[in-house]
Image 1 (cartoon, rainbow, N blue to C red):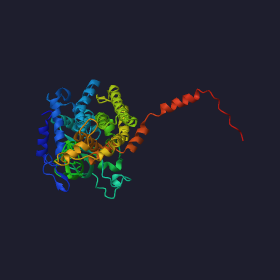
Image 2 (cartoon, helix red, strand yellow):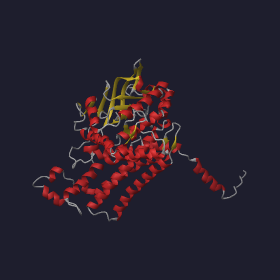
Image 3 (tube, rainbow, N blue to C red):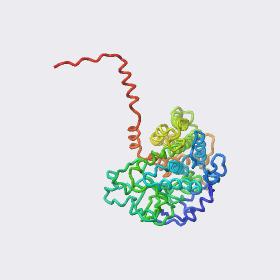
Image 4 (tube, rainbow, N blue to C red):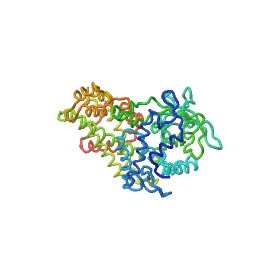
Amino acid sequence: MGAKTGQQYINRLKEAHNNVYIHGERVDDVTEHPAFKGVVQSMAKLYDIQHEKPEKMLYTSPTTGDPVSKTFMVPKTVDDLIARREAIMEWQQYTGGLMGRSPDYLNADVMAMGAAADFYAEGDPMFAENARRYYEYARENDLSLTHTLIHPQVNRAKMQAEQKDANVALHLVEKTDEGIIVDGIRLLATQGGITDEILVFPSTVIKADVSDDPYSLAFALPNNTPGLKYLSREAFVGGDNAFDHPLSAQFEEGDTIVSFDNVLVPWDRVFICGNSSICNRAFGETNAVVHMSHQVVAKNVAKTEFILGVVLTLMESIGIDGFQHVKDKGTEIMLTLETMKSHLYRAEHNASLDKWGVMTPDFAALDAARNWYPRIYPRLAEIVRILGASGLMGIPTHADFHHEEIGPILHRAMQGKNVEGYERVQIFRLAWDLTMSAFGNRQTHYEYYFFGDPVKMGMAYFDKYDKESYKEKVRAFLDRQNVSKPGLIKA
């Protein structure tokens, strides 16, 4: 089949009839439901962009000869790596980096899994072949994927096996001739129910021990598998009017709790089964975390570019772009952007072939970027709010401006330096939806916890950082001072 179109994506969702619940009701058709329709249309547009820009977005499948998405491409050279990132950026520029789980994110994971398939043979040679075949299947069918990594937040002070209800978390029930039976709950599948399949993988941050072997699983399933349910949180879609809700109307991905009710996972869809050691090492030893981080840093560059554009447009609309403190805040965003671009450049140009034969970015650069951005993103959102000030509260609606009596009043009252009232409010509603609406606040929260708890990530970063070379510099400095040590004073 090869790279799919937007209509094919929509048709698949309609035919799959995934088991999705929201606001206390089962969804009949996610492509038409108000909570999902906007983001489904945006996802469809992403798939259409592949065909609008085939030179950037597509390459020839090594197995079928069909045009397939470059976001699945296994890079063998630095040029391949850059071409893959440029394909990613076509999508990210369209979304402004506001869809954290656009297809390119998990396509990077599946690509790494397929390239490093032999890693999974440690559990069973069959699992390596499963990983290899699944990568090809995902690439050739242009699957859209959701994923789940974490257990329910019951008691974080205990391992899963020690919980009061040890069966609440997704776990292995039994092995059968057909496959494994799994039961329990997983969090927090973004785009759950509006994609083709789900990847169940171990956490990237929280490590398990042998007592958690029954919970140590990795597999893939179609989203309409019997016994699989997606329980969506409240939708943050403010409405379908693009003036009133310019971002949430298009990019509200949704997050879901995933329920497995004695679900059968066929053996050919299993990658890890009951082995905490393999789970703990999967993302690192396959370099999936590196390739996924590469996509994330590219996404964050696009997101920072979008935020900078919003801030500069807002400044200009009300004539505050000449003030010293305003320029200084704009500079903060510019410095963030250039720093992220530098991390990305270093990661790509210091790339090297890994043991799987994959051109892999320099993880030191990406790891610094993915640890830093969650800490700085709340400040970027704060800058937007500070500069918008009370203007982010005085934001009439589209209907207000089109009211016969009050519309002309608002056009005059809300005018800016060089823009009419309608245009200025449109700019401010964009800034509000980016940072202050339910959608905007979710963006800030989402970025802060993108890869997990930033404090735990920071501790892991500190522990593995090469500290000895810097301490040695200080020891060498002290030694060359040539100051004699005092003798010990005898009692």
